[in-house]
Image (cartoon, rainbow, N blue to C red; front, side, top):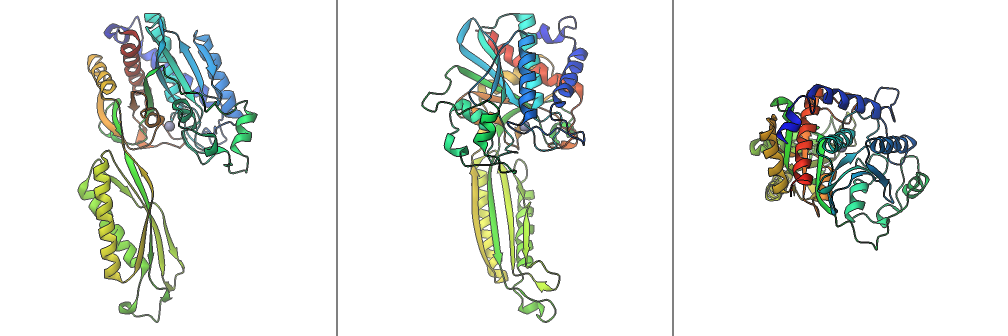
Amino acid sequence: MHDLIQSREELDFESLATEITERLRWLGGFGRDSTGGVSRLLYSEEWDAAQLALKDWMETEGFVARYDEIGNLSGIVEGTDTSETILTGSHIDTVTNGGLYDGQFGIVAGILAIKYLKKYHGQPIRNLEIVSLAEEEGSRFPYAFWGSKNIVGTANRKDVEMIKDFNGIPFVKAMNESGYTFRDETKAPRQDLKAFVEIHVEQGNVLETEKKSVGVVHSIVGQRRFTIEVTGEANHAGTTPMGYRKDAVYAASHMIYDLISLAKRLGDPLVMTVGKMEVSPNIVNVVPGKVIFTVDVRHTDKKAIVQFTEMLTKNINDKSNEHAVQTSIDMWLDADPVPMDTKIVEIIENQCKKNDLNYKLMHSGAGHDAQIFAETVPTAMLFVPSRDGISHNPAEYTEPADLAEGVKALIATLYELAYLE
Ligand SMILES: [Zn+2]
């Protein structure tokens, strides 16, 4: 393996980097919008065309390509033992006005990795499969991870039967018009999946800041989201003396200042964000009677999230008393952290060491399809840097040399998983 990705006559590093960037540009042509970004929403014409183009490419490389019922597209190189599959993949749906890297890099990387493994090592022991998942972003319909959830059998028809996109088009109609239908929910999910490895852009600035080319993800953070409503008393801004006020903005800002300071003290990997705030009546000359704000808190350890919740509750109650306001706390999202499979993480780390890759062991602060697979399939993830941490934006960028290092890590990992006894 060492030789495969290091010797220049077998796999030229510069030509790999060029091949990746050319393929990203090619794939980004499907759904290219007027601002230079990519808008490719699930079951849209652009998405259908991109999936079809990928199918052609897979077939050109000699993979067996097929869609499942809902539109997940797979390219397969059969192993000598067809009962076991090593899966890699990601998604090609984007946010509106997204970039060239989020999601589609994982598809380009997976196809190229399998292409080179097939070329230099021939038939694997276990099937090698690249999957272009039918939806991850939740950017057209209010539902995320439709593709991966269908593969592991946790998506249900009733979850999407009533939902519509922003133009009022029902999910089911869009799916049918693309040529897909629901999977048979009475059938057991696939039993052949022995590993899932996803490569993705980091969407943060850790790798760039630390000058690393590859991230080996050991866990995906858990998160809780809250809406906090602070009710004081709206009053005239001129005639109500400062001492007689129940100012909801004053109380809420005291809470927010304390909570963010606390999060800073606790530090990495805890992150906490107040991203949304509504003030009412939101008028220049009225003492605000109500503030509604959100809190998003994430950590790789559930205990730390629970502990932060307790501190948050205590702080908000104390500040409510101090400011003589009423407060309610509504926790509406509670997702557990998802550890990656320790054996696969170890394999990836060893391969990175062996192949002299410039890597960092890290967690993912964002959600990915890998967390859906991880429920039932041994799963791990690789990251490559995102310039300035930017994603979901046409300005997404990763240096070609880093993309190539990421693909090298994927090749080495898939080799160990699919070719070794
Ligand atoms: Zn993504």
